[in-house]
Length: 462
Image 1 (tube, rainbow, N blue to C red):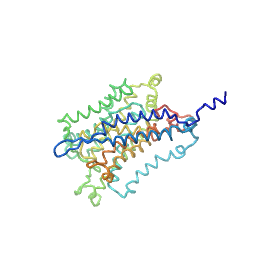
Image 2: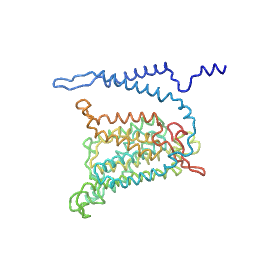
Image 3: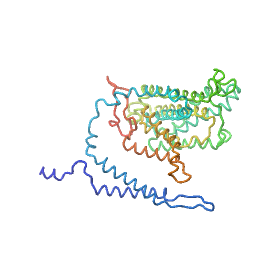
Image 4: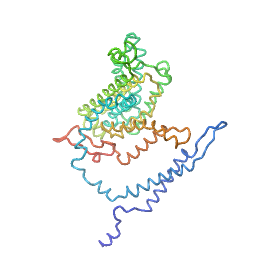
């Protein structure tokens, strides 16, 4: 009987041909249904009319790519005999992350400090670094709400907008009205803490209605909150100037504007006027704000409120049974996360010199949330890598002019950036569903502080 059982047993890694064929047919049908309304017809405006051109060949090509990729996964990935044994194997006693992980954060900080020197003051590179650091700070702020407290927030851009418009209105309307025009060069430094406070206040206002909501319901309400703020900014013309936006004064070096005038920054220090000084100033300001966010978040994680956030994320019912006030825990998470969003919004306004509702659409919230998820929920360092990957990819598509020779006339390669990033996220979630950094440093430990692998925690949590 043992011989018969061993003879009939399927060897490890055997492919079920019928199941694979059924899966490929289903994949082809789903791909056809999705691609047909999107890809088949292309509208072309001629001199006389709007003409529809069919592209069934492109639908067939994309279907072949999808089905081929699915077949490749069946043949070489999902059927590997070592997959089951690899999952059951215990994690190594000390891996690369255990040996060198503690050096990553100091190394990144040193690299950030000397980046202007490495790039020899290249304006474009420094401006890109400012752009990425802004999203790193926003993602670290959202990480408090999503990664630590486990509250899915799709309206985080609302706090970003509150911070930007706080600086815009204070610097152009209220500060000159209260203190005179002489206060305007100092407006950034005075408005920055006020913008953070107002954003935190709006975080508490958002937190109260959603205290009893979790999961999808919480996401829907926060999404609605973000859209409400944007619509208010568009339609309250007397207060926000509506879609036309507000021109605001740019940040100064403690009252010294970065202009070629005699009272400018360059003249005060006896230097030749160059716009690079303004970029360097903004770079180190946003780097300082991002480091403040990083430091405060790490310190809060070690305090009782940080442990309450993590307990709330893992199990709200158990959190209540331990006597933790979940109301205060949620409100503090929303308020502190919103405060850092307000800081980033105030910096954004001072950097751009102009704010409008078009800068605070839902896609901004989606991008920030994607950075948090891709980096790893609760992981500070992972967020840095995710921000560099996503925001750097956006800028990379601006340099792909050579694709215009392959694409149809009038198609800009930058239009495919969201498609590429979305595809990369799908692949990432397939192979590393817990993000770039899956290991967590516990805030409370017994005798030995040891990282916990993401494979040993609940799916979607850290």
